[in-house]
Length: 211
Length: 211
DNA sequence: CACTATAAATTTACACTGTAAAATAATTGT
DNA sequence: ACAATTATTTTACAGTGTAAATTTATAGTG
Image: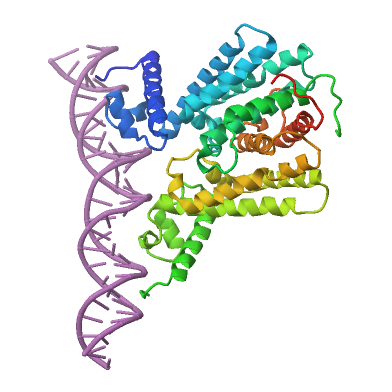
């Protein structure tokens, strides 16, 4: 099998490895997947992935970068749909939640409280920057249309934090009704009410109380 | 050293082990601490902890339960302070954020997207239930005083999700200005604006638009 | 008091991890 | 046809969680 590798060979292997790794991670969690397992799933020997990735962290960073790209695409697609700005913003929020709940392991991987080694991976930084911009960009339109008022960047981060918080509480099992004692609320109700309240709070024309 | 262990001996060892483990976890992360290391820090042999805990997960659950208790106490203390209901609610929120940012590893441990093995640990379930109730209980007072209106349970969860989202984005490095391009916002600004908007959106007397 | 049953603690052992280093095998330019 | 190069595999190792065997010290009995 050995022959001189072209750049595209390297890229191909990395892509294939990332796809397989992402699938394994989603199925068994990041820590539950071993390098030997990944290598075997790729049909190569245990050490071969090390020719294409520095170490396990390197694979992880590559998988994360691809996940951010995919995530950004889903949000953009959702926002590009039909309807008013408000409806499309809603669709974007729905897409956010759907992605997180359908691929919890992926979402976790993306937003895991992480090592300070992130900036060593330029692709990851690029993907994260894109995704970040995507997540809040629609707020600009809402402000431009006079539906809400304020700094779009700041408001975008507020909505983002809200979505992220609800989603991660859900994924951590903190919202599940398993330990219920009083009427319990699911993530849908929480986000509906949060969206309503935030829309109200940011509505154009409402004077801001206390700085 | 061997002699018959009393119940309090067992409890003492478990407490001591949890304290040491919590310190190690906070310093080096959960995965970065080995059982041998913990045993050595306790001054016992590598296998001794296994007489008091089923396995590493068991220790983790015990540490988490204690962390939830401590967290709940901090929130309660903050809310028990002087001032109006609104000021005390604010103090509670501040205490929440302070805890999370001062002990990121602990907060992470508590809210880590987790295995479905949680309900096997009754102490942990109890502690989580207490903490959950603590986190949103003050909303009842806000409603009772006519400052906001709505279902306290639901509103409490909205505020909780907001705090949790902002805190975890911060801890994940997603809010840091390292990749900045436009005026960047920190967690303080985001939470201040979010609090203002939510207070507005839940203010008593404001009619709710669309169901 | 010895002496033994018992239970705490340690030692040893094992399968598995990430990955470094050595050995092998296949391709390419001469 | 051969030598240099390089992809790949094999072997090896330190470190992990923890099961099993072994040691050690106590407590209850005669």
